[in-house]
Length: 223
Image 1 (cartoon, helix red, strand yellow):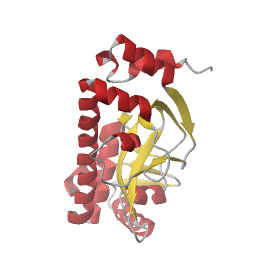
Image 2 (cartoon, one colour; image 1 turned 60 degrees about the horizontal axis):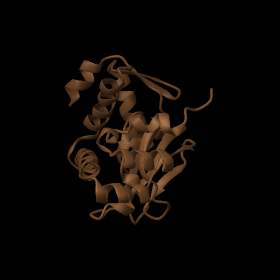
Image 3 (cartoon, helix red, strand yellow; image 1 turned 90 degrees about the vertical axis):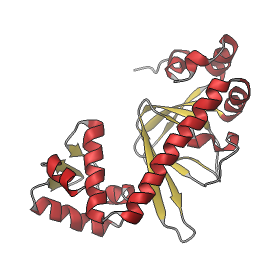
Image 4 (cartoon, helix red, strand yellow; image 1 turned 45 degrees about the horizontal axis):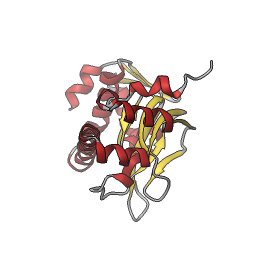
């Protein structure tokens, strides 16, 4: 099926109604749709600064890597959500190095960095939207770090499983144990051992590339 023209997609941007007619024309002309395969780098502080992205399909993950190579997942952004971490070059207060990677095949509507800079300078609504969005994402990043530092691992994993259920409404998590380990900032062996404990208690069922939740209330009690 042929993709819709960009001019028909840009009105999905949350701040679109706050743009002037001239600003809407610029965004319609300059915005592009870009596609990334699973595992592909979308943006980082040492690579291309894309601008603001709106997720049309798929999912992206934002993470940081320590000097010793340890990766910490901070948050995910999914379909119909906006990510401004990819516009780091136009956010003056940006002080942390984040990598944005496609979690699966992903399509993004990209408002280029130069256009973002122009909008943030001329339109207070866009500027407020960018900083409010990044504040929300920063809060999610802080929560991820708090879980990692202050919660037992069974609580962290239970929180991850319950959050998936509440967000998606599905009792199936189609991810490998390696992918789950990366999301909860742990080792695959630790995740595998805890999942087996959950399975022994009847909370989950472990299948190849899939975790099926059998007792969400039981997982909530762990929290």
